[in-house]
Length: 118
Image (cartoon, rainbow, N blue to C red; front, top):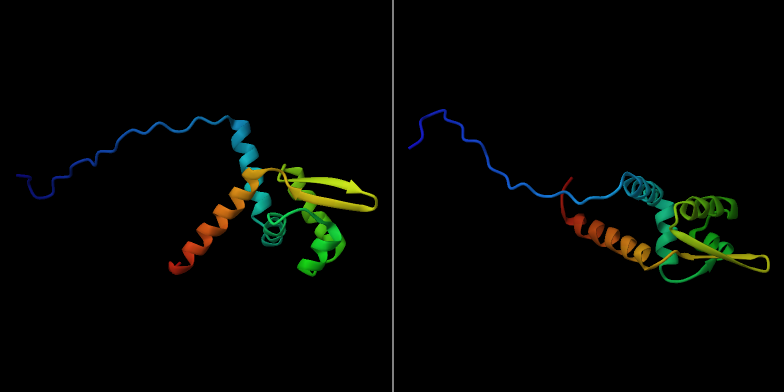
């Protein structure tokens, strides 16, 4: 039997932390910073449906070509997008399936969170 006022230390299992290099953590942080802008995230969701040229994207999001180009530049700089040129048009697509999964998971998580209070 424990006495009044006796405090017992809570026991925790020691878990091994995943081992990632400082470089990998920095790159991941840069990815999340780039994705963290609502309008850039919106472009990523559109591009998850397939390749688009800058003018198509600008029309879809109702923004200027220069604004969309700047957002795409940020996303491409951190490796989330690829681009190809065809004549005067520049087409963008997601860099790989990891990006599509990351975006889908983030939005699925955000949708689940709608029922929770802040």
